[in-house]
Image (cartoon, rainbow, N blue to C red):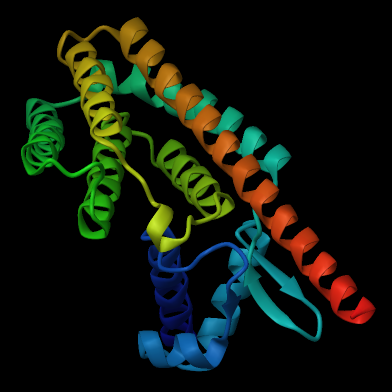
Length: 253
């Protein structure tokens, strides 16, 4: 019985992490054990236990009397997490340059080709940015590229630590409203070039170059997400001010 309970708890934990990784749960979302139980087909007790474990991971925030929520973004935490990711993932890239197999290199090559294909299709379409489905596809490709590379470092402890940090950084970045998720052609093309350059370093077994290009990608990602987070916070502050002004004007009327 204990083994079965643990299995369900771990299954719930892994599947909720999957929802977070896929962006299907956003910062600030309330996590109802009943709703998640229905959604995942797992009873509520393992769901509650999984949420408590996610809270200890720093991914979920439990508020006494109110429930559990996906943690809201905080600029200081986001910068700290990216600093940890830079240290861990650049080390993983260095290790991978020495240990990666030809099969893994070919897998990374195929993922780069998919990025290039998306960029060419976007250019041919004349659209200004990716549609939501293509946007989600680029996220999945990016996740697969990095998990393949990190696995090539051949360190289970490193892989687990990086996976946790990547998930935390994803949940700390507020989601744009649907109409504002703008991934332009230049952004897709740059992503392709950066990953292709990193792949070239791995093929050459150049550990220094692989570490450099991984650090460069993470620093750019940090700058992008911090900038976006500040925009979201300014927008939220502006909306709050507009609401207060509206209420004040109503009272005066």
